[in-house]
Image (cartoon, rainbow, N blue to C red; front, side):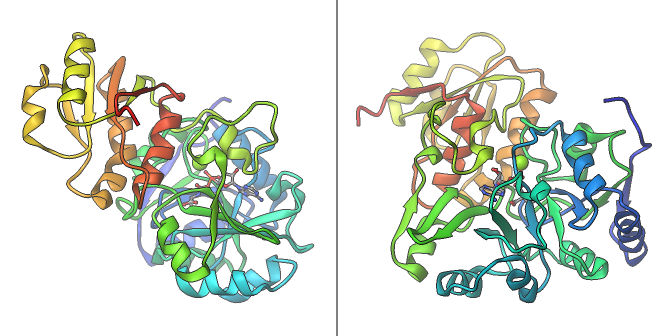
Amino acid sequence: MFNKYKTEILKYSDESIDKVVKSLKNGEIAAFPTETVYGLGALIDKPKAIDNIFEAKERPQDNPLIVHISDLEWFYKLSKEKTRTAQILTDAFWPGPLTVIVPKSNIVSDKITANLKDVAIRFPSNKIAQNIIKAAQTPICAPSANKSGTPSPTTAQDVYNDLNGKIPYILDGGACEVGIESTVVKINENGVTVLRPGHITVEQLKEVCGEVNINKGVLNQPDKKEKAQSPGMKFKHYAPNAQITLVKGHGDKFVDYINENIECGDYVIILKETPKQYKIQTDNIICLGADEYSQEKNLFTVLRKLDELSVKKAYVQAPKTDGIGLALYNRLIRAAGFDVVDLSGE
Ligand code: TXA
Ligand code: MG
C-alpha cells in the first residue's frame, strides 16, 4: 500500500486528545497507548475506518478485533447476555489487561468480529486510552498497532516504524507499562478458557473463578486441520527478521549448547543475568530482565532491537510456563516459528 499520510506523533495533552478524537469521529484511524501495547483504533460505528485498520496493518480479514470500552455499561450493551462468570472476571480484573470473549449483541458489526458470533471486549486501565474512549463516547475497536506478523509496539516510535505513512496520528503516551498484549479468555457453557496468556495469569484467574482451561494452541503449534479458537493464533506472529531458536534448558546444558552452536554475529537472549552467562563465548548477549515483570516489559523491545542490529540468528532461553512465564513462552514460541530445542530431558 502506498503512503496516504504524513504521520504525526502527538505528545499527550488535552489538545492532542481532542485532535485524535475529532479525527476518529471523522472516520479516520489512530494509534494510542494502552497499558499493554499500542492499539490502532477506529470507532465501532465507522465501517470504512475498520476496513482501513486491516489495510494499514496488512491484517488477514478473518482475524477479529477487540472492542475497547471505558465504562462497564458498555460491556452489557455489547454482549448478548449477562453471566455470573463474566461479572466475576470483570469485577476482579477491570480496568486492566484482560480481554473477555462473550456472545455479541446486535450493535457489534460482523466486520469487527470477522463474522464470528462472539465479541472480544476489554476495559483498559491506561488513562490516555480511557480518556480517548470517553471523549469519543463510543467504544473503539483496535488490534495492536504493528504491521501484521511483527512484534507488538510498546512505544510511539515502534508504531511509527511499522505504520509511517499509513495513519494520520500516533498519540505518544510513553512506553507501555506491561509490554505484552492482554490475557484473552473465552467464557461459555464450558467455563473459562484462556486463548492467549498475558499479564493476568492463569493462577490469578483460577483464584477468582475456580477451574480454568488453557487452549491447546497456547503452547503448541496449531493443527492446520483444526479450526483455531482464536483466529489470531494461527497466523505468524511476533517475528523479527532474525531467525529465532527457543532453547529449553538452563545451567551448563544451556551454556554448552550455545557454545557448540553459536556462529559469528549470532545473538543470545537470556532471561536474567547469572554468573553462568560469562561462560557463553560471545559478547552478543541481551538479558530480558531481573524478574518476570521486566522480562515481559522488555520482550518486544528486545525482539525489535534484533532487527535494528540486523541480527540473522538468535538463541533465546525459554522461560518456565507458569505465572507470566506462560505468556512469554507463548509469544517466544511464535516468534521462533515453533523452532524449539529441548535440553531439559523432561
Ligand atoms: O492488549 C491487547 O489486547 C492489545 C491492546 C491494543 O488492547 N490488543 C491486541 O489486539 O493485542 P490484537 O488484535 O493484536 O489481538 C487480539 C487477539 C487476536 O488473536 C484475535 O484473533 C483474538 O484476540 N480475538 C479477537 N476477537 C476474537 C473473537 N471474537 N473470538 C476469538 N478470538 C478473538
Ligand atoms: Mg496483534
